[in-house]
Image (cartoon, rainbow, N blue to C red; front, side):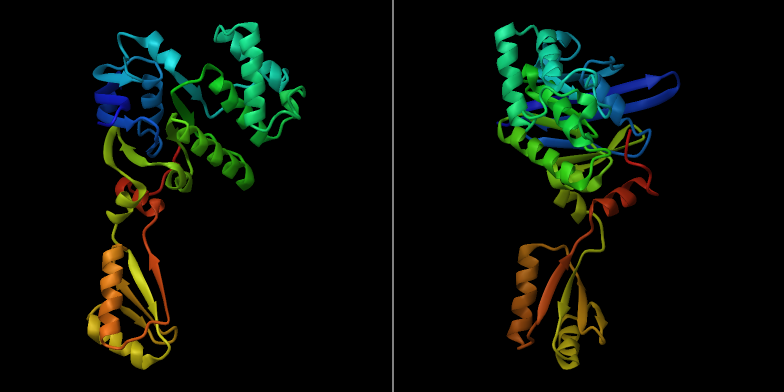
Length: 312
């Protein structure tokens, strides 16, 4: 039986007459990356604020890290970590001092605090910069330090709010690797991001929130398969083979100049295998093949309407 890090049933929140969350259900398995996406005003930030005990829900029941959110908020806080979009790093302190400060706030002994700080500085490749002011850190180093500070208390569940905003591609990929390592170690990640490719790269499951309601949920591939437009592109060596393939399959868009045939497809392995076997049985040789599937941008556009900035 799958153990859930987060289990929410009928989560509701309103501000006056404005309904922000309208009966949201969430089930986040332990040791996975769960990404919540949606346009501005969808309710993502409110969801994170409720789950991390920053604000109270108006209705619904929630279990976070095995604790009832309403009755055991202190236990929830002890089990989670939150890394916000804006760094919590004190730029006047060194990296080491930031970690030691967090250790004090977590009530670690002086010895344990120094041990934990040294471990995290090494883990996040910050040893050489440990005694330099954080103001001198690059954006990527500051985000690594920010996440290291979150890990001082060894949380079982981490809320990552847009962890790579403003980072260069190399720093983004370094952060992705850190997230993967955390999950391998059993940590659960609840991710919000403005980069759809980031959710595609990291998330085990994705939920789309719009106007306070979940409108879709599944793995990245499951969500992509819900959107039309996927196709297999077959390339042939001459027009005779191209015409024979189109006549045999009875479908597809042919490009005689490029010698290609685009055949509608869901991209499944069995479907592709059957297509190639069928062509081979009629001695129609395929010179090249590629599979084109809708990406998360297509999913987002189709399910939520015109593209809006994917932030809060």
